[in-house]
Structures are given as structure tokens and as C-alpha cells.
Image (spheres, helix red, strand yellow):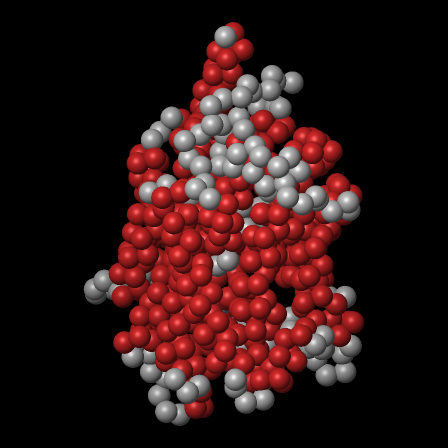
Length: 530
């Protein structure tokens, strides 16, 4: 067993205020998952029937693991560490745990590659609504087809390389704008960049969402749409809603959504919490950030999208046959809904501008774990770290743009990293916190400076319920999804190329962790001799 690292001087980066860190963490969680992915999954999986497993996953997985991540991050921060590899090494007290921490760097970096691309779609939609660039015609029967055509013109999902055919595509311009904004704010650091932006962006995002919500709630017969959202009902005639709850796919979708929504298993919360002081609260702050995320997701995203879409399109328009992806509801279906509304273009602008703000508050957080690792592990300054990550993420994002047919590159990254690896990292973190670091020790440190106590059931839930829940769901998820994706990889092409690209990044990061470990071991030896 290696020696526990000695306390070092606190890192220069710290949060400026408690409200700043709460809004930053909430901003990290509040994103496209709340306003696009959640409504799409709820609609695909029976509306109210989806909400039962959703809230089960929130209570038994989402919030407990969030508390664990906040605690682990704050603990590692007391040793001057801000990255998952270093913090895992401290918690596990063995150098091998540093290599497991590679997931806490890899996941947010790869997700950023395709997330910032989707982010640019939101800004492009908002701009086109503002200048009148979205026109679905006058024939209501053609609204859905015209909306799908516009989405294709934005994403180029009919063929590869369409973004650069003949001239620079509008989407490339918006991608460059969004990429630049992100890196300008990231370069400014945690307190001067991310925190300041989130203090203004999160309230503005809420204002835009409330404006659209008020318009939706004043639609005629909106009660029918709200009933679809909240009442457990069957997906097919003659089927009981209890049968729906026994469908493992519904539970898989709900659990995956909680992870994606709360940023659990991303490595972001651990990084953000590491900038806290020892006596800073993590229990109430963690609960507040999670609650803020749920307010945006359920009370704003869900109540806006699902009831309005149900009202205008009916349950048939919200089936899996129509919504072939969780993003289809937001980009293909909602423009049809806005076309039916009075002042629809104004509310369309508010909606997609709000999506852009939600997306950028999330994407800002995704590179901070990698920046922290480069700074503390390899002694690379922030300017150089941002530059290196800019080149790496730009290459991955360009692959999503170039291999745009059927969104193959984006879908492959999202499956292997944005879904599978998040489950793996969450399981690793639960085991590390509860069984290696020690749940009693973790609870004691979490409550040091906390304004409220952790629930009495927390120890049992994080030690037994969460691991078993995760294991069962992950195994069911693998059985349901892995065979198809492995078959796809064996056929070669874009999916295999993207997986090899991700594997290359993993190898590169593991080498960097090895080099960083030498620095940390040398510093620990010097401190011990002193």
C-alpha cells in the first residue's frame, strides 16, 4: 500500500461564492439532456409510465452518487488535487487507482466532441427563427416533412462530407462560433469564466424556458397533454401500464437518463467539488444542484415539450416509430408544434436560444477535468492545456461533422462513451467510495461543515442498493444493446474507425497518467523527507 499523500498548498483555482458553485454544477447538469433527451425518452416510453422508474433511479442512484462525488472531490481537493486520476489515487491509497481515473478525464472530453456540435445546431435553429430562416410552408400535412428536411440541411445526415461540399456550410460557421465561445470562457478559468457565465446564463435560461412554458400552458385542451405526461398509461391497446413497468427497456432508459442528466459518472462533479474548502458544505449544495437540475428537466423541459407535442401530434406522433432518436422530438417535432402556435417563431427562437444556453453551461464543464489533470499532473499551464485540448477535441468534433451520414460518428461516441462508460465509471465510484475509502469515513467527511445531515439510509443505499441496482441495469443494458453494436463494429466503416479513435485517446491518457504519477510520487517522497 502506498503512503497517503501529504497535504499540499490549496490550489489557486477556487469558487468565488457558494451560489456560484451551485449554479455552475447545476449549469453543468442542466443541458440538452433535460430539454431534448428527457422529453424524447418520456414520450417514447409511455409518458407517465416512464416517470415511475425515472424517480426510482433519481432516489436510489442519482442523488446518492452525486453526494458521493461531491465528497470525493472535496476530499481530494484538500490535497491540492483536482483531477479524477489524482483524486482516485488518494481515495484508493494505491497508484493503480489513478489509471482507473482515466475514465474521469476521457468521458467528458469525448462527450464534448459531439456535444458542442449539437450545441451549434441549437444556435443555428435560434438564429434561423430570429431571421425567418425556418419556413415549413402553408400545407399542414407537409409540416413534418419540411421540418425533417430542415434538420437534414443542418446536420447533413444524408451523406458524409456534405458540410464542405462546394462552400463552407452554415453549420460549420455556427460550430466555429460555438467552439470559440466555449474556449474563450474555459480559458478564463473556473471563477472568472465558468462561474461568472453560469451566474447570468442559468437565470436567463430559466426566463426563456418560463416564457415558453407559459405559452404552452395556455394552449387549448392542454390538460390532455399533461395527462399523457403524468398518468401511467399503456403504450398499446389492451396492455396494462403495469406491463409497461415490467419492461426492462423502460428502466434502462430511465436510469441512463438520470446519469446523463445529473452528470453522474462524468468526472465533472468530482472536479468542481475539488475547488471547495474543507468546511464548505457539500450535502445541501449537492442536493440543491440536483434539485435545480430536476426543476429544469421535469418542470420545464418535460412540461413544455411532451404535452405540447401530444396536443398537436397525438400519441401516434410520439411513438418510437416516429421519434427514431431522443433528439428527434426537439429538432424535428417541436418546429411543427411552433408552426401551429400564434407567435410560434418568437417562441421557437426563445426555445432554441434557451437550448443553446443550457448546452453551453454543460459543455463549459466538460474540459475542466482534463485541464486540471494537465496542470497538476504534467505542470502544463492553463494556456497550453486549453490549446492542447482545443486541438484534440476539434479533431474529434470534425469527425462528427465529416461523418455526418446517419450521424454515425456522433452516435458511436454517444453509445460507447456517453452511455456505456458512464455506467462503468459510476459503478467504480460507488465501489471506491463505499468499500475502499469507507462509507463511514466518507459520511463523516461529507458532514464536516455541512448544513444538513445525510439521510440515515444513505450508508445502506450507497453500499448495497446502488451497486446492485447499477449492476442489474448495466447487465440488462448490455444484453439489450451490445450485440447490435458489436455486429456493427465487425462490419467496419465509421463505427469501427471512431472506436479506434477513442481507444487511441485512452492509450494517450494512460501514458500521461503514468508520467503524472512519477511527478506525484517524487513530490510525495520530497515531502516525506522534509
